[in-house]
Picture 1: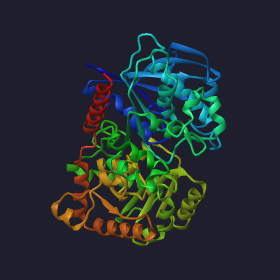
Picture 2 (picture 1 turned 90 degrees about the vertical axis):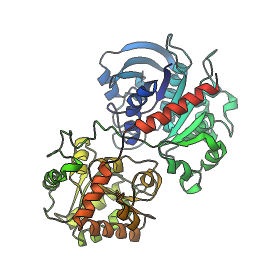
Picture 3 (picture 1 turned 90 degrees about the horizontal axis):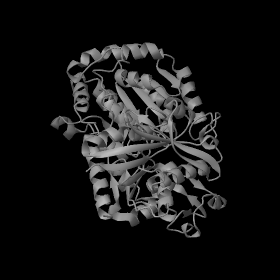
Picture 4 (picture 1 turned 45 degrees about the vertical axis):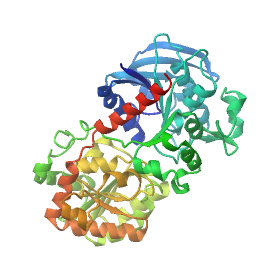
Length: 485
């Protein structure tokens, strides 16, 4: 029997993306299909999403969805069912999904995504005739209110549905002041410590975690880490209280999109058996970034430039990296001070450090194909996809030992090197000394070509697909559906 799942999220590739959330949500329908699960994705009707739909069919209309008119329209996303909430007052805006063109958060994000959750709960409850779902899967705080509405204000006579709350990053919780509760359309009993109330206001992610039948994170290590105050961000008590209802399921990557043997964005395609062809990509990347061409290690970064990602620590050790004979090609954007700092470093080290501000999907592929090692010094990392792309492309990950980074990279310690299983370099603690030591160790390994090629081959031999994780989600869905039958 096919399980029908409504996946509710604020972004999904290829329609809208600001980070790894979009990659995961976009990949799930294809990943779950072989396991008897049909996923319908529900997205907000941002301008880019509506433009991609053309002239979609209207399935349902709300004269006033938390006060504004809205309609539900249907389409496809990579051949799988897609529904979009077309609510111009909430989503027909310039800028990004969450911020205005200047980068400031929209002041009414709480209302925008509460309306999105209300619509999702209505859909799950059967307001569209002939649309039935067995389970609702909410992603991050922007979709979390879906589960709160299903719990406290479901559609009349709707059958109970299990809900999965996936935390892609605990740092983003969707908190708003107490005054916003009146605008949510929830009954008074929802304002409680086991409902939506959180530190005197409304906590969207907290509400979803409380209402969910199961909570998942995007790596096993992160599921353990968020039980600790350092990573739980104030919600560790809920995580601990939910006990065995918290699961860590590692993300996969789209191995059709990320395949160096077939990637048309590259200067030269290559495989683990033909690593010599990879050099053409390094030379092309040096030209593209205006870097000196030499035989030293080319370190790369594809990241948001934020404290979480440890970019402040990396900025502080760039002189050491250059002093070892290394170079750095960086693609990213984020904190204005960090952006300025990296541009200053590039001016200080012309030909050795180069920076591109922003994000470019095709360039990220070329960076992974041309770089020798990718630096990921994250203070916390729920899963991380960048290191998986690096492994697949022979770009050796140098990572902090945390979350999904720890789960996916095998450190090149003596035992792992002797056993022939190492795939990268891990280090403990995101400090200047720790990162400096990791860069030094990486450089020393790079200067041993056979060892370095073995790291590359080991990484490229890994299975980064959604096959195992897709089955884990399908098994969890089936278990939760059975519980209420």
